[in-house]
Image 1: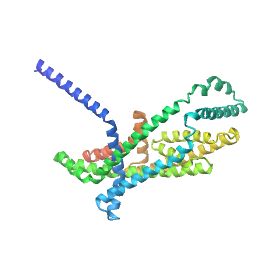
Image 2: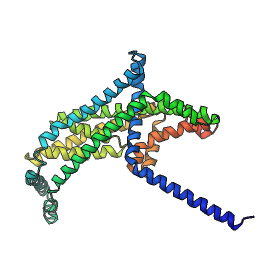
Image 3: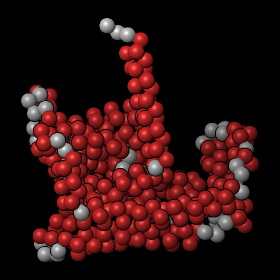
Length: 363
């Protein structure tokens, strides 16, 4: 029989659970930076594990030296990326200063005027619309100094975050066996084998996935830089790198990369004739980028991803598409790793399920 005491106890229990969940969510919100550091460190660890094993097995490094070598490789790569942007920052620094905000506005106005003349020559009366919109007068270019101050603060935070990530990654790589032993002590004996098998398979598949992702981005980067160099675009190396990084976002990223490449191509040719030089060059660059993206989306990306996580290319496409509709761009980025984790867990805990059997036959 349900009594008032039972009901009040149930209400109190529910209230305490809600309070606990709220406090937990608040706690995680407050330490969100630490959680991001841990996630990035975990990704670097998954990428670094095969390299660590290579140093130990092939080059006969001991565990500590192999870990240090992997960390040095990460540092060199990060340092290379940073140094890659230094020439661009130095060459464009004067244009971003407060004293040259007028020059920036003048360049933008010049580009808009050239577009207007081109459209008028093709009997498109858009000049009146552009003049009424008065784009340049509505844009306050004096925000740039504030932006630079914010950028300096971001760089400072990035430096601290990078140091934290590398420190955490070092111990993830160095003490992975100790972490595994500790996990065994916390896991109930009845679930120890499937959980440990899941962790091992997940680590293996995700390591392959992230290495495959790096290979895919490198292929796209090389193709982009070839396109930009063919048409003599300044800072081709930087533009190609930025556009390649955007390919981390499946399907949407290449579209953003094309837009970015078009804008940077037009701005890099300011002072030239719009109809005879700027427009044709931009179109050629876009065509080159689209050809690269068609090859990447239909050949390299499906093959690399399907091989790395042992899934059919159509399966990967549908997972990314569904995650994008439900969770947006972030969902598209994490779709494949999360789907891989769910497949491994399903294979270990529900091996007799027919759907699980069908989806995990290659794992």
